[in-house]
Length: 133
Image 1 (cartoon, rainbow, N blue to C red):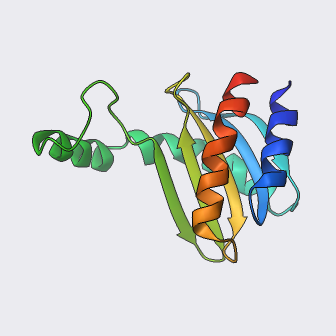
Image 2 (image 1 turned 180 degrees about the vertical axis):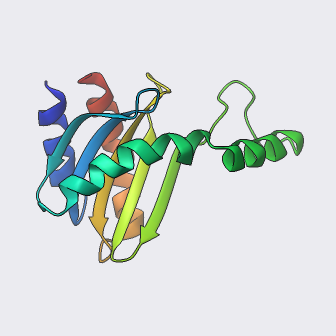
């Protein structure tokens, strides 16, 4: 299955999902995308550049260090695996893949989406999307 097909399939299952992207944090490149709302195409390109800072920026690294000191973080699997951000009228879901820790799948949903269901469906789609790479 191609990355495009996997992202299209994921978008069909995630409620109110209007865009999906597969991002390489090392290069800041968008390796694959699927968009049902043309306004989101530019958003995915911008997010591709910003996502590395979201997962690997200084503030996040400091927060993760505090969690490790408190014994709340797993030493082997350092780094956030998931970030959900509400911005204006959108819910942005970012999931780091286990197979490729420097890759992130991004889903953009309308803010009308059921957050719990969107997160659950996003998690369920992660394996097939990562397998398509």
